[in-house]
Image 1 (cartoon, helix red, strand yellow):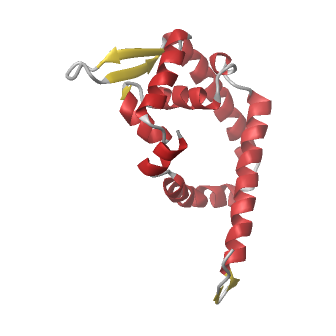
Image 2: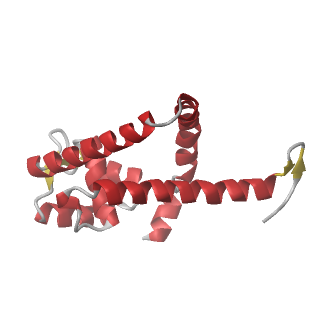
Length: 167
């Protein structure tokens, strides 16, 4: 780790500590949610990549395979394989685009969508209850951190080259 000084001290060490604390906090939030709310039934036996694709399609019905690949940081062939697996399990529908038959549009099947939305509602209610129990200043601090977390999320997106190297 390279260290350098500024008016607040050694920034490199501070940033490393922040990164470790942020990762630990996010991991704990996800684990506590999973333990308290569980996973939606159709997702319980899926790999993380499959579940991530199902959640992406729920948020973006009609998304193309190539667009999904870009969002997930995967190559389109990998997403096509995931789509095939999820289609076989009755969770996804793959339909040709009306204007360009080479493009496949993805939607959840009705049973999958209902299960995922019920799970999302349980998860949202659980987090809402926890947020309501916080002091107003703590809720305000979380709300104020959301734009910075959005920027951090963008910075963490792999480039296309990185995605190709991982597959």
